[in-house]
Amino acid sequence: MRLDITGRHIEITPALREFAEAKLSKLERLLDGPVEVHVVLEIEKHRHTAEVQVKSRTAFFSGRHETGDLYASINEVSDKLERQALKHKEKIQNRKHRKGPRDPESAATIEANATPDDAADDGAPEARRRLVRTGSAKIKPLSPEDAALELDATDQQVLVFRNADTDRFNVVYRQKNGDIGWIEPEA
Image (cartoon, rainbow, N blue to C red; front, side, top):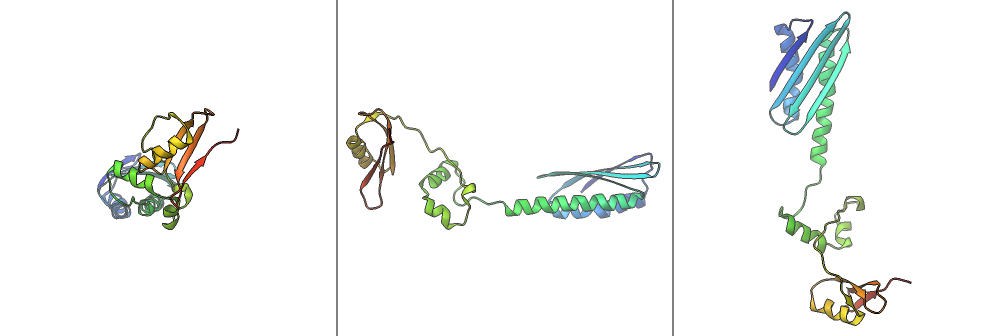
């Protein structure tokens, strides 16, 4: 831990430095790595203020507390920073980690091929689902029969096309029983 203490209207004594270092050393364990700490201690009449800024690889925290005793101010601000660090650590630990390969293209393919039943099985709420663009296609005018033939020729599950007769968008899709479904919007 790199500790930098600045005093305003006060000279920093070795006892004060050791107390601050002892109180703030817990942050290094909580933040898992090198930590830079900047402490500003200020005395102005009866107000004793401790202001601390903590910078780690993953986070930045700051806290300020004012009491009638400088040691109490350091103690209170270190407690505030510990709570912030614990909350940050919990947030990192509770973050969902991706399953599967780290390659973005293959991850997009896996998500595109996942059915809604797959998403319901792993217990994730619907709000966490992501919309992933997997490609683009030209929409050409076809008859529903031609669209069904084109869907048969590919391994896709869904085909969006412009109906040549009505000039409206239509959808053909593979059903579980092997038939091809056709969705036409109402007029």
